Image 1 (cartoon, rainbow, N blue to C red):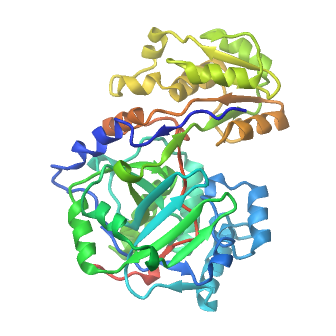
Image 2: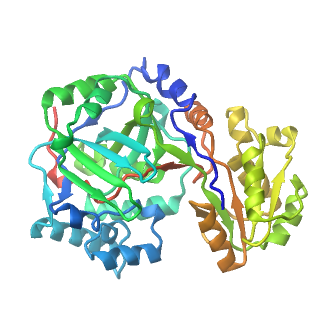
Image 3: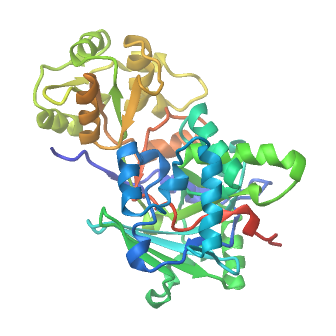
Length: 442
């Protein structure tokens, strides 16, 4: 099966958003990324690879079981906890890891340089720190996707119980200043952690404890802004927890959140599509109804359909049950424009993912955008396998162009949830941030 194309995130558009636009004239200032005392596994490389895991939202039950079979202390045990009282169990396990010496608390605050290198040679490097939380209206930390209440409630319950930032959000910006220099300057011999995970991604970590570098980073970022590449639900959770704790406890570590900040001009990730699975709608019915608003091509095989998808210039998607596939396209510009509100950029309404949700999922197929009705898959293969299991339809999409993501974010508008999939993703469990370990930084 051919892979859907990816688009490098340093594509023109991100630079327009976080390049010249990254120098803020905003009275409230720009990004603030502070050092923190990290909680890290105190193990050798051989075990570390079995203690870290992917982000919570890409771990299904089978994957979780495999991770914990390899090592019962894998971070998945607290990232996606299970049990009678899963959140309390996660907190108990975190405390046990520290008390037993499995994890150490770094003695001084640090910024952490984190590099991910895939088997294909793609390398992303950024800085892990504690970012000051900002209201989206400040136009400093720019979201581009909608969130849903369920995942935020789950993450909030977990963070409330653990008082720990378990996983970083992922911010991208157009750098070139002192922060980028600090990231580039780390020496290979100064590694504090390294591991190669089962997907052959090499993870490496360095610590920057020099207070002069910390001050240079703070000054460099103070007039910049960044785009949330990944972690919209986690960022919403950070802000929800802050709102819950500040009335009784005032200012504190909850005013910041664990963040990986990546300079796209030097170390940009790739962005991929996230596909949909219509669990309750068979392929034949999905195609029949779609013909009300768009052209449905004659059935073909999946590989041929994906080739057509990759060449399309306007709305296009593939409907398939894994055996046969049909390309849908040809939604009129007038129909797209009719869905656009006056406050949003034209680019948003025309995106494949927006057309899919507004015109097809909502209006034509009349499906609720809820789990078990519209599900999500990060690869075409996963989507097809899921559709086969339930007798439904996989909807295969193209990646959302990054320039469109940037335009939507800068306008303050939001794309449908799960519109982008940035890779490589930072591993969970490599560095965590417990509130109790932090000190006030002045």
